[in-house]
Length: 193
Image 1 (spheres, rainbow, N blue to C red):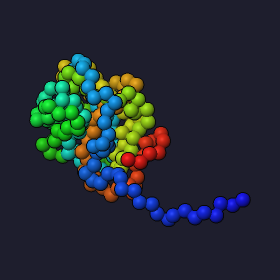
Image 2: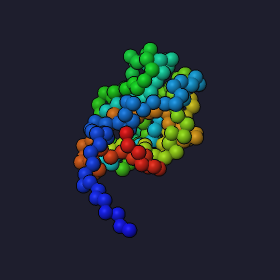
Image 3: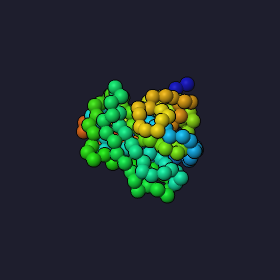
Image 4: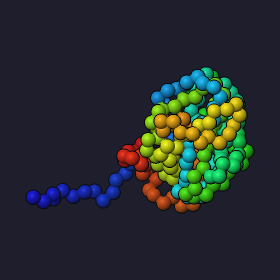
């Protein structure tokens, strides 16, 4: 027998990322809001489909996290490109943002690391990066949650249980976006935000 049903020519979904954008929408939250720990640099390895500029680093922090919050952007070779501090975020749990003095230009299809230094604890979801995550035009890589213990900022490179440490970027695209703005996919299984 033949399937004679017709399929629609178009579909409209009001989700996605208009420029400026970030990997995670504000509605995404960690499984563990705060784990007390020794000082650690936590990050995400990411890339963009198009050239653009990183204006800020976003991160999830618990009200118990001490301020100031230091954030960093690292080149593919591990060179520190920029640092910023968010000093006003004490006392609330949620997404915080530290803005760079000037936007930092990044190249398309090149892996960078965005990170924050957490002096006394952090938020996370274990296995949050078993698959990568795509939200146009940004990709957080599979096994992209990285860390490095230490009292001062340093490039995080270690991976543990593909953990998502909820570090993100505020990105402004300067090139044309190659996919429809409504399309978001988890690289392992398709899903829509």
